[in-house]
Length: 422
Ligand SMILES: NC(=O)c1ccc[n+]([C@@H]2O[C@H](COP(=O)([O-])OP(=O)(O)OC[C@H]3O[C@@H](n4cnc5c(N)ncnc54)[C@H](O)[C@@H]3O)[C@@H](O)[C@H]2O)c1
Image 1 (tube, rainbow, N blue to C red):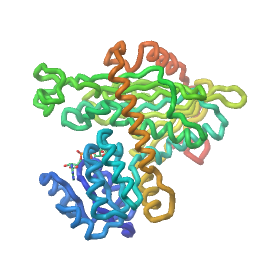
Image 2: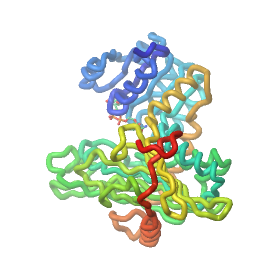
Image 3: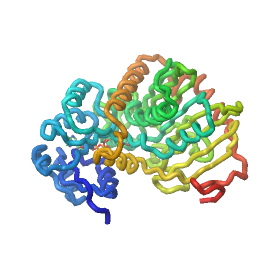
Image 4: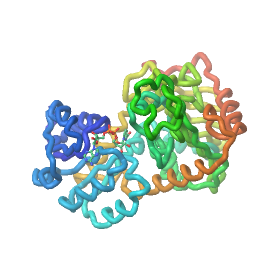
């Protein structure tokens, strides 16, 4: 049994709250109160062995060591204001994205007043896969020429259940902050800003959902396809931005929520080019840095985020290519990003470490996503909902991916255990 080291009060008890509860419990945190506005969820709160309370003051009276905001993004600013009103010095963990762009003024005014530490739960900023990619880039002295981050899954079923629809940021709203976190980490390591650049191509696509009969969305205000039994969602199918940094590095951030795989890379590329709506399990998430070594040899370092076929949940992998040929395959890379990020968060709250993701970083990410989402909406585009970006961008993407080769004799290495098969 893990000793109780800290206590917390949680606001919101939906999908992510349960993941928080498990991860934090494993790290010795006891949840003393849960504020959840939907009474229908109170049984679930009690079922998890927790206590629902109605008022912020009631939770504050229990003097939790920190608060944990797990409500939908649209009420983060309001919830933080409530917490700050009754516990102005309390440490607070807030889910990403930090708030809706429309609530920035309200959020900033609370941030200015609040005296306790605030950590944004941008869990990918604590990813071991991200760190491993960057470590290989640095160790080999690579000068990055191209950076790709892709996060793809089919969100069809979630959409039909009414979840994850973001009218403001569109498809940039879901994985957008995670895409940015990987690029920002590379920038931190190299002392350069990889988030600023001249945009070359930008696109947001729509999604058509199948089998929508009886779904909450058919005919609802979200449904842009007015035909009965079908649902089309505007700007929720996928998002892409390609830009060139001042140092000349190309950056491509890609997220398809209709399951269209953009940058298939062996050995973990999904078998098909598209993750189907019926498949709620498969995800394809990579962080690829192409760079040139001091001897002029081109490398491609590819980190694969979990879940991966053949590995357990929480396990990622790394592949190092020389001139597009696999040279090293390292797996598994233990990468439970949520637990890793909470560990750093709790260290910060306990005064033992720096803030792993302060609000300023999250606000910058939000600003970028808002700028890109606005630009993409006004872009006329080509514009097929089956391809993210211009057709020449997509052709280059496909040509590059076709170059990856995997020789038969590359052994899988465990991290720190050269040459062994897992
Ligand atoms: N870090 C990650 O990887 C990750 C993954 C998924 C979701 N999220 C974020 O977590 C947040 C919550 O997402 P979710 O999927 O758990 O949503 P959800 O809809 O499943 O759960 C939200 C819960 O909050 C409750 N709620 C709403 N307003 C409230 C209020 N004012 N006070 C108290 N309770 C309230 C709802 O009734 C619901 O039970 C979002 O900001 C989302 O972006 C982060």
